[in-house]
Length: 161
Image (cartoon, rainbow, N blue to C red; front, top):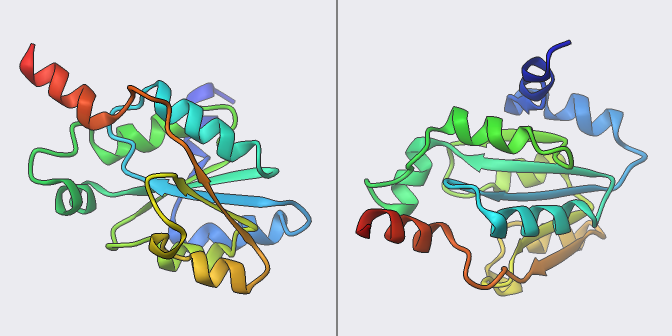
């Protein structure tokens, strides 16, 4: 099997989630989500720390339409297929799922992760799915970002130079 085929097999449709979560029922699952527009060292740090919290890491990725709605018409810089494929190529990422909704609550309720991860720029009360995850006996982890790395600052640097 080619590497690209292996990578693409990690990118799944919403209706395939149960197949994987059932297969992984004896393993700890971590879920996080985001736009991941320009993958940088801060993302790698954040995602690798999330992966260390469980046996399987699932990432929900905002579709192009969703990113534009959240970040403005100048975003995303990279299309959803590129963003999902780059994330799926990381060895510690097990699944990538595109979602078009304003929040990943449907993914979280379907996956029922053992660990829900967001950046430490959030507070627990602002994390979508935190209440549901905790009520099910799961945990919510807020991971600090690596100083000096953000997509917004990278975008600004590119545009201004």
